[in-house]
Image 1 (tube, rainbow, N blue to C red):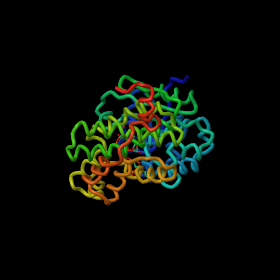
Image 2: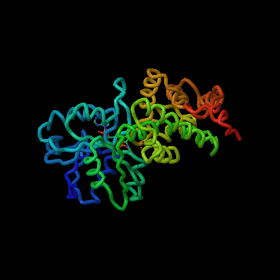
Image 3: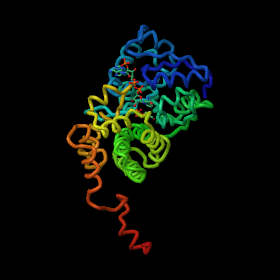
Length: 325
Ligand SMILES: NC(=O)C1=CN([C@@H]2O[C@H](COP(=O)(O)OP(=O)(O)OC[C@H]3O[C@@H](n4cnc5c(N)ncnc54)[C@H](OP(=O)(O)O)[C@@H]3O)[C@@H](O)[C@H]2O)C=CC1
Ligand SMILES: O=C(CO)COP(=O)(O)O
């Protein structure tokens, strides 16, 4: 394993790109930060790079990946691509890593995702994350690059699960913001987040992710961070909608990207296609579309048909085993 300082190019100089640049610099790596407004060309920025890390918002990932491919295809032979975006592409429903893998089929692609609110990382507070790849060696290499006293990095062999955890929780974080904005209390919030995790697992399983990944840092961990912190932009969207702001008003005052807004639309397409029940996401979708009020969304969730808690574990099964208590 190569523990030498690496040349890292970070694509995207927003909140997350800058925080990751800080984390990489702790271990003496050479970091170049690029955005579409950079004075230095992408070609020059990518010269001799060992690692490309993408922290571009979902809407720009494909364009930027194509740009990287067009300017520097040959010299990227041994380069590891790391993706840190948390979103889904409309129409294709691809995750960011699937876009990178399609455009760079011969490069190792690593997903980096976890409970990582960039404002806390900028304050040098401790955090943990997950790096996941089909290429174990590449994931271990990225683990070495970023591990420090401030940032604890775990590997995971389920890149789709790790990526989807970070992406799907954004929609639930919007609903958690609504819950707090309406002052619905701790019981309601616990119920919402727990049932939200069930929705994440249902979608994740359909898209090929492992259930246990959603109970780790990149799933439950990130869900807890974003559903409980006013630093989360997605949480802020929900909180402010519950305080009578319109979506355009919220988005125009928000610093940075709230990916959950677009992810929610893509999830509705996926759920319809595969007949997956995602009641919380559905209410968030209707709320974002201005079709219902936060109170109406709450009523709809509370008055759904009563059912067993677990999809594949009906309560009748437990009772028939004599475990009723
Ligand atoms: N902030 C956080 O705490 C975390 C964020 N993330 C994820 O990282 C991603 C980026 O988030 P964050 O840095 O906060 O967002 P910001 O809005 O702060 O930054 C977004 C970056 O993406 C670039 N960008 C946006 N659209 C395009 C495009 N069409 N073409 C090229 N570049 C584009 C922006 O460039 P420009 O300035 O030119 O618009 C900017 O560099 C998101 O997917 C987010 O979910 C993941 C973990 C933590
Ligand atoms: O993904 C994040 C923390 O892990 C950042 O959340 P927001 O995009 O909601 O700010």
